[in-house]
Image 1 (spheres, chains in turn blue, red):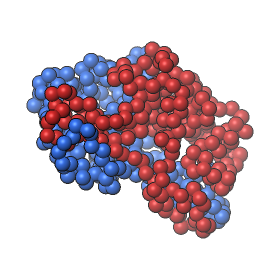
Image 2: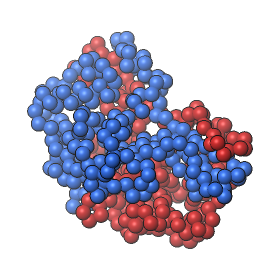
Image 3: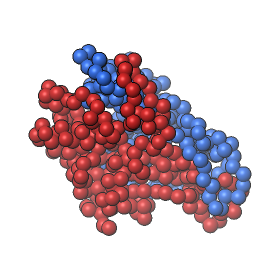
Image 4: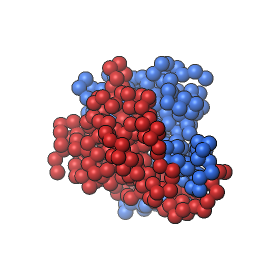
Length: 218
Length: 218
């Protein structure tokens, strides 16, 4: 597939580029957060925030009074990156060391989500990503809470992904050096849940099943 | 401590802000990568790349011909963010759900590192972060490789960190709801090393000790 625009064409290690929707969606779905780059007229900013996907859009949310909503709700151009670290790649030469990762960069501008029903539906999608079923257990947002929250949507149509997998690529003259070479994999893994003091009911399945599993699809 | 500049003052949840060097250094040291935001005159970009710290500077590196070096080596203003996900925070109300994280945002401009001896020293610092001892095992960069590589340094003096830890903060009227509340922790964990087919020597300590340990100081 081709890149959707000039600025999404991967130039460095272009053979690692992926422009298909399935790869892009999988990366967004596997990450709890994104980094949003934008310029406010005097400075560039890089802001981390939670994100999720519904269909062909990436969503973030924030307090109406917050900087994110004030600066991004007005159609400002942004670049959003999501990066998942999968491992360190140790080659026989220092120069050929690398990392395995899945990354996505999306260009465009956010637009505020209109309509309380749609906001409620999208927040349920977000809760379901955090913990499937949680959207039925937690006390839903009330009118005041929803009125104080802005959801922002970014179309996924101008995006590129880059994925590196596998072992080190050593130069021919280094292949026989007596140096260990391979991959040191990394995985963001769920640890034992910690109940709050005011939690007085049995843990639901998404809590008891948390520890040790891979939290999001890879 | 106070923020070093107006643009590093944390506004949203300001009580989570940290402006001390020790917190900042620990976050940089615990992450393998950062996201760099910059504006090239027509678009904002958000670029993930590997990073490391030496003293009071953050370092990244790239190929001389690459976009990162071409666009950032000339003193362009940037914002660099590092974010570590530590867990999902489940409150009794949907609205009070949160995440535990450690994040840092640094403002300034990169400057290319001059001098081959200094470049070699700094790449050893990077290799040591990736795998302590690796800087003695891998075939060192030769003159051609170092000539093709630019190291970029960003001072850490204009930065802010933000750290959330602990359990959910529920509203008083939600405290007795029959809903599980607590933290689902996350940790980037080393998995079993995978040797490359051309790796013919025993694994060194930083490989045999990789699996199951926390890779970087928390």
